Length: 182
Image (cartoon, rainbow, N blue to C red):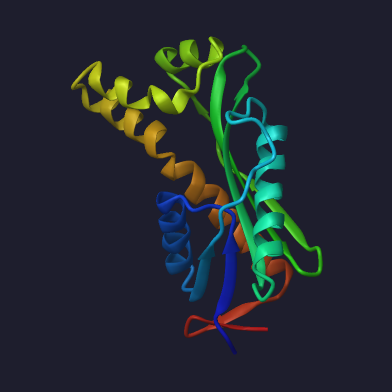
């Protein structure tokens, strides 16, 4: 039995902390190695397909940089128009191992408020404006929505948890006292 070694295609401290939170919830001990990699997509992906591609690229590139990792993980946030042409926020998480096994999972979607819709429609980078939304009102609901959009935590957690559960189940890993039996 051994701890997993995971190469993560990001140096984003929040994303790494969200991964640690998911691993802790699943009672999996792992060494996480943050790797700075390029997503290979636009800075603000505007489709689920492009967002997924970014997560795949990040997972592959992280695994390629850390040769002794058990697998690579890529996480990408993006936006997509829904049926009524309004943008929704989403996340894709992808796990790729050395055997070319791949699992990609998409998070739930969240309809962006009109404040954010206008920014994305103008082709501006949403990340530069998320704190402005928190200043428009002290209303508790607006504050909660603003924090969700700024931190993206629910989307990242949802996609990571689903990807890890599917990957571990598919590969018949199981944990005993937090250690993975291969």
